[in-house]
Image 1 (tube, rainbow, N blue to C red):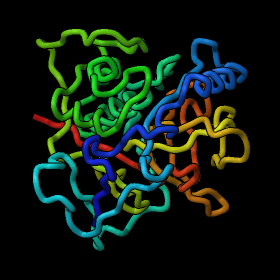
Image 2 (spheres, rainbow, N blue to C red):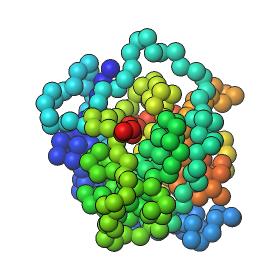
Image 3 (cartoon, rainbow, N blue to C red):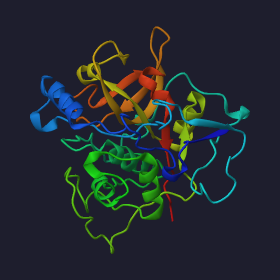
Image 4 (cartoon, one colour):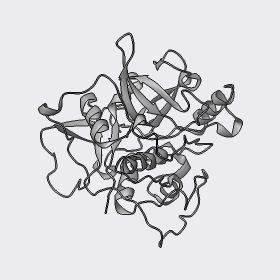
Length: 307
């Protein structure tokens, strides 16, 4: 049992290091946009500038998160919302294949298209909570736009941090999508004082880089978020299990993990939901080999607060 924290405690899990790819710059974002624009079936207004978060250290580029064994490393109020990985030796029976999409077939959510907003940090967090609420019997879609424009410690369409997004979900919560539909725009945080907001449980922010722990979380709690290194060749993905073959590293990208599987060759993969619209990939989803592009290194979630 372990919990993961970053070297820099002030931002909980992320920092902006000089020359780090934590946020894709505009030139890289434009490259992605151009790549997607050349794919048959993807419309111009469905191209994307992608900018998100990843676990980087200022002291060493691409440093993994620090790993702590067996006990919470700071037993005080410094990390009030982080929790242990819920996993022990009695919980090691895991199936070869598991697909949460089958349990979520009746949930009223469509595949999001980011458009020209670097919003996948908000898309992933809002959709994780929406899907977990649906698994609890409450079929609603939460507003990505509310999180995007009101989580002011993040950077709206310039990118965001998972830790700050989850903390916002605990402290403030967001309204349903019908009150603030996604428009991929930044501006003032529109008032929703008299509208019901949905939050995360205090103490429920979860992070892991352990495959078995992540599988257990998926099976028992619902979808999770993942961050990985995005390369050119993913933009032309059609089917099968993605492994990076060629092209430039375009920076980090966040997606929703919906399950896992094993192909005919014994290759294990994650089932992921992207935010590039339903004309891309497998109707908006894709399979990626476990560990590919560092996808195992930063999985995250928080639990909905049900009152």
